[in-house]
Length: 193
Image 1 (tube, rainbow, N blue to C red):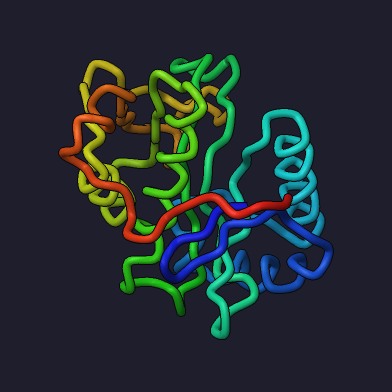
Image 2 (cartoon, one colour; image 1 turned 135 degrees about the vertical axis):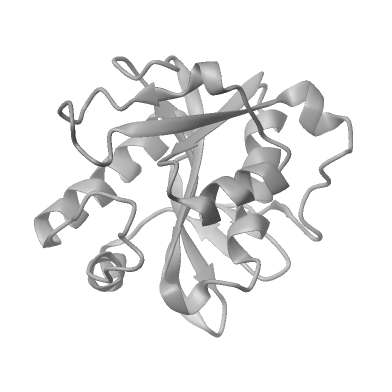
């Protein structure tokens, strides 16, 4: 479990399903993502739980103590073939609309980057659709760099699908540790899983 000044990033639990389903039914939250029904949400959470058991990280459930038991998901996930950037570890985020515009995604992302690089990752990547400006602007604020030559067509989507084009950003451990992109104030590790 990770803690920051305002957030807890924790493993998923059974009680998270209903709020995650509600968040995933919001068309603005899902505008740049493939839709998820209840069964899809349950399967997504199960994949995060399995990834946490295997790798000790996942897209964690984000809790805002005293405000929201589940405000979204932020964290790290292993990228496997056929993704063009594989093998890699991706950072990603998805927040409920009520949590937008308050710096929570950046705060949780910085804690996740600290966690990954402290465990020896050499690089962390992020990718999104070109139209998802909120997301790639955050990638830039985190110090991630884009080489247009790395952009790709998502291999799990059919040719011509409007969500197939993706842009890729990278961040090296060396660049993160340089201090140009400081970690979130108060970020640290909490005991327990």
